[in-house]
Image (cartoon, rainbow, N blue to C red; front, top):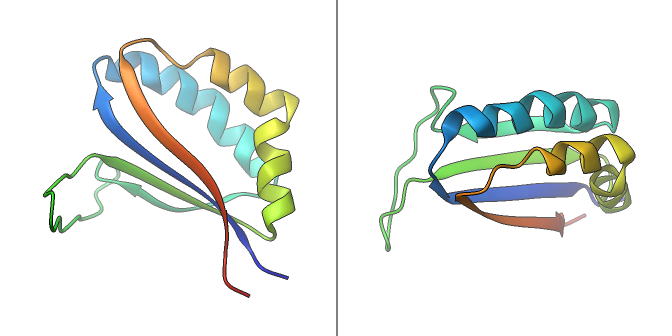
Length: 101
Protein backbone atom coordinates (compact mmCIF):
# COMPACT_ATOMS: atom_id res chain seq x y z
CA UNK A 1 0.00 0.00 0.00
CA UNK A 2 1.31 3.42 -0.97
CA UNK A 3 2.07 5.91 1.78
CA UNK A 4 0.32 9.26 2.08
CA UNK A 5 1.98 12.62 2.59
CA UNK A 6 0.98 16.07 3.70
CA UNK A 7 3.03 18.74 1.95
CA UNK A 8 2.70 22.33 3.14
CA UNK A 9 4.53 25.42 1.96
CA UNK A 10 4.03 28.78 3.66
CA UNK A 11 4.83 31.61 1.21
CA UNK A 12 3.75 34.29 3.69
CA UNK A 13 3.80 34.25 7.50
CA UNK A 14 3.10 37.67 8.95
CA UNK A 15 2.52 36.54 12.57
CA UNK A 16 4.77 33.61 13.55
CA UNK A 17 3.54 33.69 17.17
CA UNK A 18 -0.07 33.06 16.15
CA UNK A 19 1.08 30.26 13.83
CA UNK A 20 2.64 28.56 16.85
CA UNK A 21 -0.86 28.26 18.40
CA UNK A 22 -1.86 26.21 15.36
CA UNK A 23 1.34 24.14 15.65
CA UNK A 24 0.59 23.28 19.29
CA UNK A 25 -2.80 21.84 18.29
CA UNK A 26 -1.83 20.35 14.94
CA UNK A 27 1.24 18.44 16.18
CA UNK A 28 -0.63 16.20 18.65
CA UNK A 29 -3.53 15.77 16.20
CA UNK A 30 -1.16 14.59 13.47
CA UNK A 31 0.72 12.24 15.80
CA UNK A 32 -2.52 10.75 17.13
CA UNK A 33 -3.56 10.05 13.52
CA UNK A 34 -0.27 8.23 12.83
CA UNK A 35 1.60 11.04 11.07
CA UNK A 36 5.37 11.38 11.24
CA UNK A 37 7.18 14.66 10.61
CA UNK A 38 9.86 14.11 7.99
CA UNK A 39 10.79 17.75 7.48
CA UNK A 40 9.98 21.13 9.00
CA UNK A 41 12.27 23.62 7.35
CA UNK A 42 13.90 26.00 7.91
CA UNK A 43 12.58 26.63 11.43
CA UNK A 44 13.91 23.42 12.99
CA UNK A 45 17.48 23.83 11.87
CA UNK A 46 17.20 21.98 8.56
CA UNK A 47 18.77 23.31 5.42
CA UNK A 48 17.18 24.35 2.16
CA UNK A 49 18.93 24.80 -1.16
CA UNK A 50 16.59 26.79 -3.39
CA UNK A 51 16.70 26.52 -7.19
CA UNK A 52 14.77 28.09 -10.05
CA UNK A 53 12.51 30.62 -8.27
CA UNK A 54 14.90 30.69 -5.29
CA UNK A 55 12.19 30.54 -2.61
CA UNK A 56 13.07 29.34 0.88
CA UNK A 57 9.74 29.47 2.66
CA UNK A 58 8.71 27.20 5.51
CA UNK A 59 8.13 23.65 4.22
CA UNK A 60 6.45 20.84 6.20
CA UNK A 61 6.45 17.20 5.07
CA UNK A 62 4.46 14.62 7.05
CA UNK A 63 4.26 10.91 6.23
CA UNK A 64 1.36 8.52 6.92
CA UNK A 65 1.18 4.77 6.37
CA UNK A 66 -1.43 5.26 3.63
CA UNK A 67 -3.09 7.94 1.54
CA UNK A 68 -6.41 7.14 3.23
CA UNK A 69 -4.84 7.64 6.65
CA UNK A 70 -3.50 11.03 5.53
CA UNK A 71 -6.96 12.13 4.34
CA UNK A 72 -8.61 10.84 7.54
CA UNK A 73 -6.09 12.75 9.65
CA UNK A 74 -6.97 15.98 7.87
CA UNK A 75 -10.68 15.33 8.35
CA UNK A 76 -10.29 14.36 12.03
CA UNK A 77 -12.00 16.42 14.71
CA UNK A 78 -8.68 17.17 16.40
CA UNK A 79 -7.08 18.54 13.23
CA UNK A 80 -10.17 20.52 12.32
CA UNK A 81 -9.84 22.25 15.70
CA UNK A 82 -6.23 23.08 14.84
CA UNK A 83 -7.32 24.62 11.54
CA UNK A 84 -9.53 27.06 13.44
CA UNK A 85 -6.35 28.36 15.11
CA UNK A 86 -4.70 29.24 11.79
CA UNK A 87 -4.16 32.98 11.89
CA UNK A 88 -5.08 35.53 9.28
CA UNK A 89 -2.21 37.14 7.44
CA UNK A 90 -0.41 34.10 6.17
CA UNK A 91 -0.62 31.99 3.07
CA UNK A 92 -0.35 28.19 2.94
CA UNK A 93 -0.17 25.80 0.01
CA UNK A 94 -1.35 22.45 1.44
CA UNK A 95 -1.65 19.15 -0.41
CA UNK A 96 -2.30 15.52 0.45
CA UNK A 97 -0.51 13.26 -2.00
CA UNK A 98 -0.21 9.54 -2.53
CA UNK A 99 3.28 8.11 -2.62
CA UNK A 100 4.55 5.72 -5.24
CA UNK A 101 4.08 2.17 -4.03
